[in-house]
Length: 167
Image 1 (cartoon, rainbow, N blue to C red):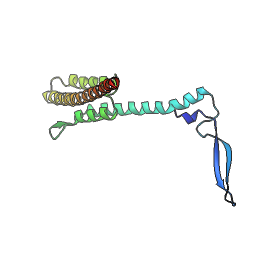
Image 2 (cartoon, rainbow, N blue to C red; image 1 turned 45 degrees about the horizontal axis):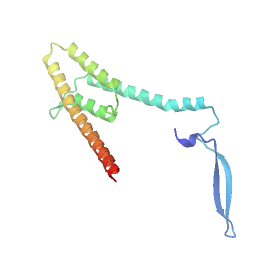
Image 3 (cartoon, helix red, strand yellow; image 1 turned 60 degrees about the vertical axis):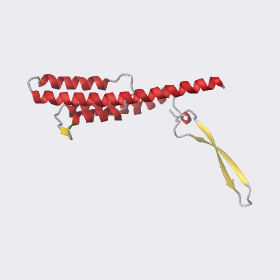
Image 4 (cartoon, rainbow, N blue to C red; image 1 turned 180 degrees about the vertical axis):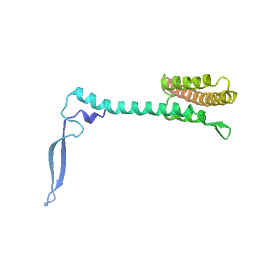
């Protein structure tokens, strides 16, 4: 929440130059349009609406992804399309930055269900094996890159602290 939402009234100064050339300052108290005269509980309810809308949209997007990957999407340039779509969605949603997300569990469950349904169909099993291995490779590259970036950040902070102690 922006700090200016807490101020119920602000004074506004308007500077004007008179015909004689002197400056006059007119101070008026104006009501901030972001701070209605409501109780703190009402403000919390107002601020929850965008978060609920965001969570609803995120759930809708996850459902769409899960419906999409249950279909046989095929390959593009020897790459399984489903793995690439899953990876791009996870990147877009910043799922790698979260401690634990439900979306990983739901994706694994969806792929597992697709494999169980087609246990006797070697083409479908090969398709999901290809998707799973490609997704694993993409995830490993991302996690290694983020681990290396955080290690560099830790080294910089520790060396800065060391040099700070020396001076």
